[in-house]
Amino acid sequence: MPHSASLRPGRRDRDAFFDNAKYVAIVLVAMGHAWEPLRSGSRAAAALYLIVYAFHMPAFILISGYFSRSFDLGPDRLRRLVTGVAVPYVLFETAYSLFKRSADDDPSHPVSLFDPWYLTWFLIALFIWRLTTPLWRIARHPLALALTIAALAACSPGIGDDLDLQRVLQFLPFFVLGLQLRPEHVRMVRRRAVRWLAVPVFSGALVFAYWAVPRMSPAWFYHRDSAQELGAPWWSGAVIALALFGCSTLLTVCFLAWVPGRRTWYSSLGAGTLYGYLLHGFLAKGSRFWGWYDHPWVHRPLGAVVVTALAAAVVTALCAPPVRRLFRFAMEPRMEWAFRRAAPETPPVRARTVPRQTGRKAPAVHVTNGPVG
Image (cartoon, rainbow, N blue to C red; front, side, top):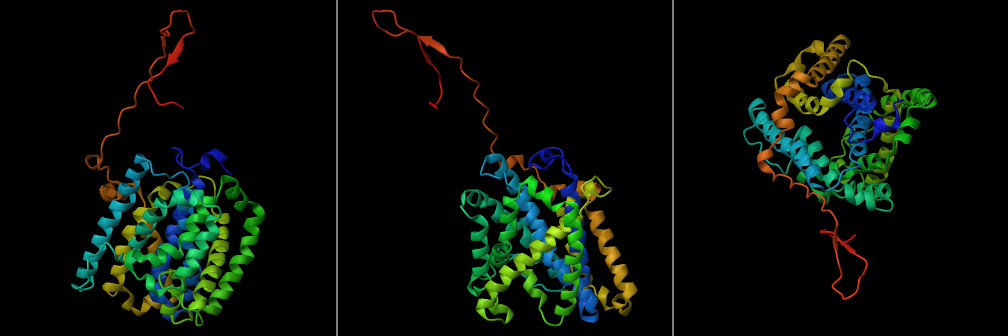
C-alpha cells in the first residue's frame, strides 16, 4: 500500500493504484460496449454485460469524487473545470452529433448542447457535480441527502432529458461517496481479507446476473430513465435506486480490492482514460452503423473473444501518450486568451513606527498597510 500522502489529491506524484483502477475500468467500459450487440444471442454475454454495467461507471464516478475533495470555486480550479470538462463537452458533443448525422445517415439529428448524446453525458454530469462540491462539503449528512435526491429522481419522469439530468441525479450518490472517502478507507478496501471476500461476492453476483438476464432490463443500470418510463410503478424507482446503489457500491469495493497498487505497464495509461473514453465511442457506435456485427461469426464464442480483445486493445491504444498529445487541443486546451491573468501578489509591507502626536513620550504604535485580522 502506498504511503497515505500519495493519495492526497493535487499532488504531482501520481498514485499508481488509482491510475491502475481507472485503466482497468475504461477497459471494462469498452468491453461492455463491445458486448452490447452480442447479448441477444448469448445469455453469458448478457450476464457479463449486467455485471460490468453494475459497477464500471460507479467506480469511475467514485474516483472522480475522491479527487474532487479539494475542489473549490477558486479561479485556478474554475479555469481547469472549464478547459478540462466544459470545453471538451462542447467539442465532443458537437463531434458526436455530426458523426451520427453522417455515419448513421441521420441528417435530422440535432446538434444540441442541452441533449447529450451517447458518452458525453459524463462530462456535463462531472461539470455539475464539481460545481456543487462546496455544498456537499458543508452539508451535515451529504450521502443521505444525495441518496434521497437520487431516489426521488428515479420516480420523477417530469425531470426530462435536458442535460441528462436523470443520470446526473441518479449517479450523484457515487460522486458524493467519493467526496467522503479518506486514504484510510482506501487502505481498508485493499486489505487481503477484503480481496478474498470479493471472490464469493463476485461469484454470487455472476450467478444472480445470469438468472436475472431474462427477468430484468439492463436499462435500470443506465440510470437515465424514471421507473414509470421503464414500465414499473412509481414507488419502485426509489426502491430500485437504493438497492442498485448498495449493489454497485459493493461490486465497486470488490473491484478496487483486486486492483494492484504497484506500478504496472499500464499505470501510465491511467492518466489518459478520458481520452480513451471519449474517442473509443466513435468506433463503438461506428461498428453498429457500418454493420460490423452483421457477420454471423462475430456471434460465435470465438468471435465474441476476438471482439472483446479488440475492444481492450483499441481503448488501450487510445489512452497512450501519442494519442493524448494529438488530441490535447480538444481535451486539455490551455486557452490562456480566454482568461484574465492572475493579479500579482502584493509584497508584504514592513511595519513602520509612528509616534503618537502628544506632548509626552509614548510607546510606538505599529501600523501595516493591509486588512485587520
